[in-house]
Image (cartoon, rainbow, N blue to C red; front, side):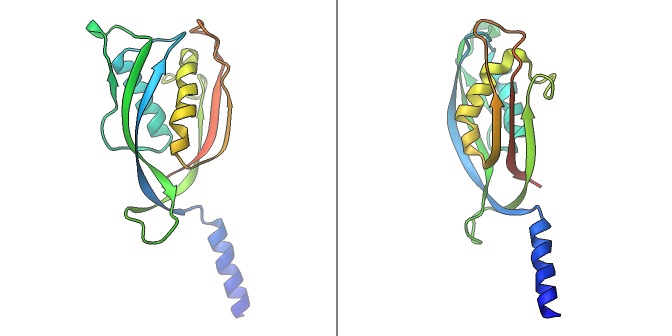
Length: 167
């Protein structure tokens, strides 16, 4: 009877999608060089906030893009200061900021993320994948990011992954 109870407990744990985790602070400078698509500071900020929040990040400070053009004109080269936290699987029970998370499936594409992302955002999603996504706990990362230079429409791209995110 005791063996059956122990077996049932291990099965219940295996089915529990909750993962012990802790928040890890991440600070980085995001550099965007748009060949096809340019952004205003506000546009880049809004797009990055969308990508971060959909990926399960907790913003510690507002996203700040710079240098901003006179009158808010779009620019080919922008940077953004990112200060956010991501869930990392807990290595030990004494984590400073204990939490729990579950695996969430995320997909960025013009069809699944509309109106927040369009075909013109291919280069931004590529740069996000290369520089920001490694800061997250992810699995099953797959992408098709064939951004066509000097083409702001018609780019059919996608980025799919599972991320450890808050319950």
